[in-house]
Amino acid sequence: MDRYTQLVNTPIGKTVAKQVGLPKPVPLKRHTPGAPVVDGRVLLGGAPGGRLAQSLAQVLADAGAEVSTPLRPDLRAAAAEAGLDAAPWTPQASVDHRYAALVFDATGITESAQLDELHAFFHPTIRKVARCGRAIVLGTPPESARKPAEAVAQRALEGFTRAIGKEIGRGATVQLVYVEPGAEDQLAGTVRFFLSPRSAFVSAQVVRIGKEGGKVPSDFDWERPLAGKVALVTGASRGIGAAIASTLARDGAHVVGLDVPALEEDLKAVAAGIGGSALALDITDADAPRAIASYLRREHRGVDVVVHNAGITRDRTLGRMDADRWNAVIAVNLSSIERITDALIEGGRKAVLNEGGRIVCVSSISGIAGNAGQTNYATSKAGVIGIVNAYAPELARRGATINAVAPGFIETQMTAKVPLAIREAGRRMSSLWQGGLPVDVAEAIAWFASPATGGVNGNVVRVCGQSLLGA
Ligand SMILES: NC(=O)c1ccc[n+]([C@@H]2O[C@H](COP(=O)([O-])OP(=O)(O)OC[C@H]3O[C@@H](n4cnc5c(N)ncnc54)[C@H](O)[C@@H]3O)[C@@H](O)[C@H]2O)c1
Image (tube, rainbow, N blue to C red; front, side, top):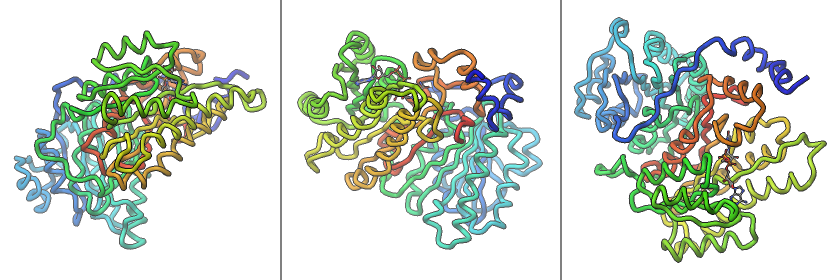
């Protein structure tokens, strides 16, 4: 049996195979510089007693969005206070409208019976979401709930958003954002990202915003959030790494691209194209962490953003895998990230990573779901999630963050080498029915890297179009 046949005979595969080829994937809208955060009307709703309506209304007002709200006095008052001229919404009115986004504050839901608020809001509106539209539900992290009943109801939101992600169709995406009490003024960076076309290939994710981040200044430049910052991107000569380098440069950063000496010419070309610099070395060299740290200190007096993107695959089923394949993958994808991170954060206040720094790792859905033929790779990429979890508290103490993206099927040289049938299955097995582009991973990294997302720490976000693998 070939690998594709194996795949379609797994329980998930069977369901998918039935559907493969039927719905037409919608071309996804992506960000163009200067475009509005959200193009079209946003419906802002919430369960009574929620604590986020005011800050959500402010984020929407600052983003220049056209907004409607239900006729509830608290929601109308929140919109008015944010300076929004919000149109009144009733379930009947939604017959005529298409919504670019549905935003729902679910923090008022404190017991399971109140989950009917989700039904009341989304039932009349979910089929009114525009092409490539957005749905965002905001809740309280279950671990921060005051009572078990609230924790249960808040935990239930995750099943809801993951299920509507599978129903919504037409290139639209759905997210759940848990906001810790005290982090109400830190929504802007994350809500703007999820509303905008920057998050085109991110769906059915759960993000936590903690209260450590600090308020975003009112004169924050959303077009160039990384102006004056220095970013290191490993594996920057091609593929996803090149897209990360140019996206961070677009956002204003000076990018130091790093890649192996064999690809120095390609690396220099990428760096020249974005006004950045090139650092050719192998991250597995014993001396690499020290060399990187002293380069960044000498040339830039430190670094603000570190993206651990370099990675390799050496696929074989475990019984056929020699130790070299195993060791090479663990060394590049996992151990070198730990060693380099340690070198950049050692020395307390004198560390190479500047205060408020951002570390972003690149994991993979293989590290979440596991994948046949990739025991080494899945181990390394699950270990990357371990790095995020283990380092997050220490980084929070320095006002810094560490997070990871876990890409699904992304169109690169790596995936172009995959045999056609498996490649086609990889593309289609997601709620968006297509592969993502390197820029989709880059945009998620830019969101983590932004000074506006200091409360987003210790998160792992899949950039996979809600891939059915391990979803
Ligand atoms: N393409 C996908 O669908 C996909 C999916 C999930 C995760 N990822 C991850 O995204 C990252 C980028 O993947 P890509 O598809 O762009 O791959 P790629 O092979 O095109 O690029 C990886 C880059 O890393 C560099 N690199 C490898 N070993 C290095 C070393 N020892 N020192 C310095 N640089 C080194 C390579 O030279 C290359 O330029 C990887 O971590 C990969 O595991 C990719």
